[in-house]
Image 1 (cartoon, rainbow over the protein chains, first blue to last red):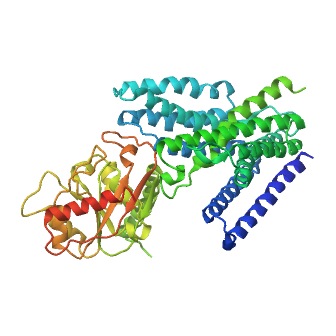
Image 2 (cartoon, rainbow over the protein chains, first blue to last red):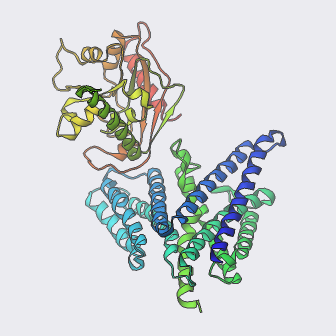
Image 3 (cartoon, each protein chain N blue to C red):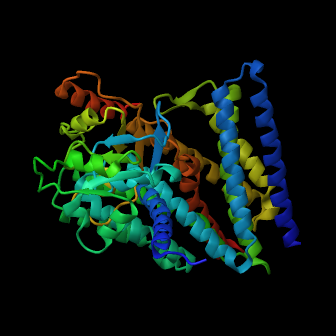
Length: 321
Length: 213
């Protein structure tokens, strides 16, 4: 029964991706429709990265008892790359070099090792407490006080967003879900989460393009409108509710969580756009030509993951009858 | 069939070369851009701004595999002959080591370099001389001018290295894996009768311009 749920979920995503690919290729061939070629290209690029994301997730799930460590490692690598993009964009000074070594080679791997070992008490405080205090201390030792608070805050923010927040997505695989098939339950929980966040991105974009009038913050992102925001969140919440059967939740609970996750995803996109505007780049990917721009793809997941993790954990521990 | 020790060593050098190039690309996160220029086996001088000890290795690594065995980075002998690892790396990267402290009139580095490359190898060199601490590109030394005066047939390819000084700054031994970018620009030559100062300024400008492309 539980296996069937996973197969239906995967099959549904497969069908959706296939039709999205078909639409994308169709739009590409229809030059005379007067569509913006760049927008179609963006759409096709997104679909390509979803294929990659889904294939990798599905492959990781299929590994049986190895699926959890593999998924944790996978997210660890994504974090590492996202942190790379974040710090590359951040103007650090020579005095920060040793601190950055610690951040890249100690705190990032350690966070994922703790997630992999399911040491909840440690991975929830490692970065917000230990790394938070370590970073300014180590920078101070370098003796360079110029723009001190700004530099340390930027390193802390990069570590929090790209490592700490994202690591809560694979941590979902260790939650005490009810029922005999915990492995499948947890895998579907992670898949449900990623799916709702990604759908929210797409729906916001689509609604914004279709009926978007009032731009929320034109200086930050001319594409994000109130219509897109409301339409996207409503659609993603509906989709999430319709997927309740794949999760440990009741339909109304799935709806509430989808709503929260969508709002967080939106917030993540806004914040990352603001950072990019400040640094004068459009995409993290164009910052260095040829690199994919991992941070562009995962900004909403980063913001939604810790909140979804926390609420789901609280529900499973305190509310689950 | 017996394999000669020399051929064996050449094969292992080639394999470690490929491996180290991959590692260097991973650490430096370097992406190569070819702007109005294509990889070619003709004899070239790749000249670049100097920001980090990793520069020669990273440029060499961002070239396509079939070119690497034909391109020799010019590097400082005093730095690359120290210890056990550096000489090994220098051999793997096919480096052309130049003694910076012992330059004589009858044995100028330019003559030495020209003799070493013959009619086969290309070069990677850093006309600023030392590494540059700031973000501005320093004045070019005259070596590039004399090199192209003696061998006007060499294609001069400007190369701009971006962000590598943050990956491994001066005096640090552990790199931080940020992303960097190597841009190869359109080839240039020494014009007939072009004064030295004009040529060096033009070459420096060719490197600097790649930053904004």
